[in-house]
Length: 197
Image 1 (cartoon, one colour):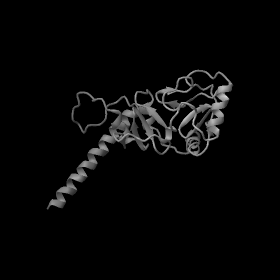
Image 2 (spheres, helix red, strand yellow):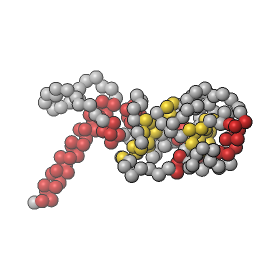
Image 3 (cartoon, one colour):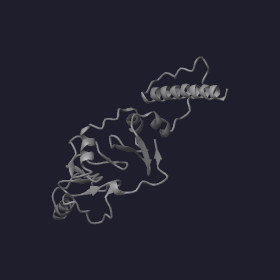
Image 4 (cartoon, helix red, strand yellow):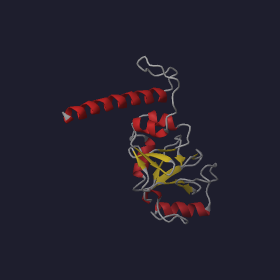
C-alpha cells in the first residue's frame, strides 16, 4: 500500500515539474500570452528568480560569488546581467570557439576568437584587445593587461605595446604568475556555500 502512495506522489511531482519547466521556457522565450492554467483564473504571474530559470537550463550551472558558471561550455555570466535569462534559455555548446579556447587555456595560453563578447565578472572586455586566456586569466597579447573577475584596464581600449606589458606577457607564456597575483584564477577554491545545479 505504501509503495502505491509513493509512486502516486512521484508521478504527481513529475507533472508539477514538467508544468513548471514549460512555464519557465515560455517566459524565457518572451511569449506575450499567459501560460495555460487548465481553465483556472490567474491574477498575476509572480516574478521568477534566476535560480528557477537555471534549473530549466541546458547548462550545467554553478553559482559562485554573484556569477553563474557553466561547467560544460565554461561560459559565465554575472547575476545582474541583462542577458542572463537569454543565456539560460540558450543551448550549451562546449564546441564554440570561445569554449574551446578556454579549455585549451587551462593547459597553455590560448587566443580567443575575434568578435566574441567576453565578460570578466560583470564587465565586458573591450574588443580592441587581442585577448587570450591561460588558467582562467584573461590577458591582452598587445598591452599585457590582465583580469579574471574585476577588470580595470581591459574594459578600456587597448593602449598597445609597453615594456611592462611585454614582461607580463612573457611571464604568462612562461607559465609564471604575473606580479600581483598569488594564484591562478582556475585554482581558486569554490566556496562551500556555492549553489550547484
